Length: 138
Image (cartoon, rainbow, N blue to C red; front, side, top):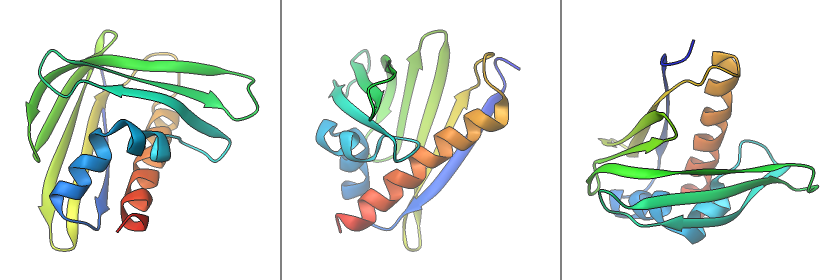
C-alpha cells in the first residue's frame, strides 16, 4: 500500500512557541523520538530551513539494532507547518491552535514493507511521547 497517506495526531498542552521548539530542537527530539520504551534516539540534527537537512539515529536500548531517519525540509512556516522529504516519501506536520494547547497532525506516505496499521501505531506512539514530553517540560 505504498503511497497511501497515514495521518496521526495529538494535542500538546502548551503554547505554540514551546510546542514548536520541542518538535524542532535536537535535545528535545532525543527525549521524545521513540515508539517504545526499549528504543531511544541517540543523536539528532536539525537545519530548520527550506532545503535544510535533518537526521536522527534511533536504536534499540539493548544495542541489537538501529536505523537513521533523515531527510530534507521542503517547506517551513514557523509555528504552523513543516513539510519534508525522506527517501522517496514525504510528510507534513501541521501545528493547529486548540483550546488547551496545540494540535499536532502528522501526515506521511506509507512505505510498502510494513503493514499500514503497524506504521500508524509506530508514528502515533512517537507523537504520544512528544505530547507527554511537552507536558512534562511545562
